[in-house]
Structures are given as structure tokens and as C-alpha cells.
Image 1: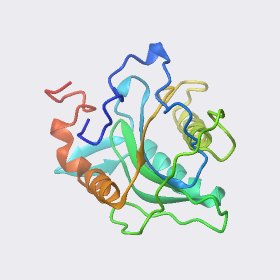
Image 2 (image 1 turned 180 degrees about the vertical axis):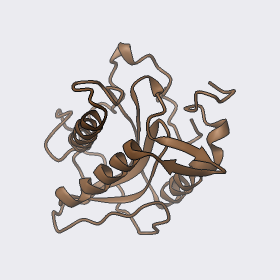
Image 3 (image 1 turned 180 degrees about the horizontal axis):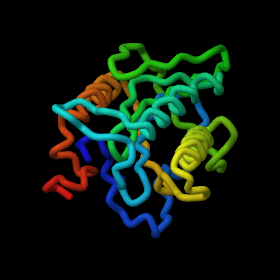
Image 4 (image 1 turned 90 degrees about the vertical axis):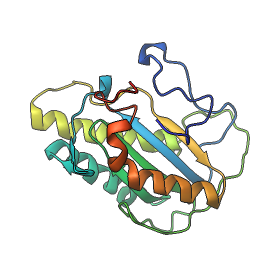
Length: 199
């Protein structure tokens, strides 16, 4: 996908392997900034198309956009930084504030500062208010709405897993923001694009 992916993150791995891609002993409920990518089932382009470097959302894409934004409205412990719905995936930066003092959401172009994480060992892999719990809630809500729209109850919309990178400093944060903003412009070469020569 990009140079931003850590060496141990293979986004083209077969989804049937069900191997955990989370960091062992990392507390994903602690305050910090996380870059996440969530792909559709079988990388199917469900959410619209790229036209002249701009993502044009269809009704399913608009639903994903709305449910992602709603994530910060119903979860007081997080803020959303830049994000981008693409034809078959969504990229976004989630900031777990841990303070429950309120949340805000911003689409591509936001320039807020995000707190950076510190490692703390834990045996809990999907605790309440953790990154995994947040993503599971978003995926469930978006799937329910899309399946209502297309009349396909219980049909999967997303791959079972997702991909994350822990953002460790301001330089990484700025680089990832730029990557997300420019993702539609790079769609022709994106490895998640079924028509790309890199697939």
C-alpha cells in the first residue's frame, strides 16, 4: 500500500489465515494516535469511484462517511483526525484521548495536534474503549446500514480484520496525514486498487 506500512504488516495476506496483526502486549485502549485501514470483503469497490483524482462517494460510501463521523459523536473518549473513504477501503487517524471530555471529527484537511502513545503491557486484546472495540462498532453500524439499503441481511461488507499503525511522533503524524489526503490522487498506483498494475 505505502511506505507507511510497518514491515510486519502484510495487507495482502489471505484473510482466511485469521492471524492476529496486533502488537503483542500493547494496550490499544491507552491514549494515543492510530492510523487505521479497513478494507471491504474481497476488496470489492463498494463505496464509489475516483474521478480525476477525487473520490466520488455513492450511497454506500456516504453511509460509511456518516458512520465514521458518528464514531466520535457516540464515543467521548476519542477524536477523529483526517480520514478518507476510498472505493474499497477507508483510511483514518483515530486519537484515543482517554479523558471522555468530548470529541470532534474532521475530514481530510484537518490540522490538529494529536497526543502520542506510550507503550504499556496488557493481556487484554479487545478491551472496552480499545481501538479494536471502536473499529468493531463502526464496522457493525456501517454493515447494518448498507445491508438494509441493498436488501442483503447478514452479508459481510468488511474484511474480518483491519490494519493499524501506532503513530509515535509528530513527524509520522504529518506524513500519514499527507498520505491520506493524497490517496485519491494515487489511486491508479494503489495496491488496493483491483485495476492497479501493482496488484
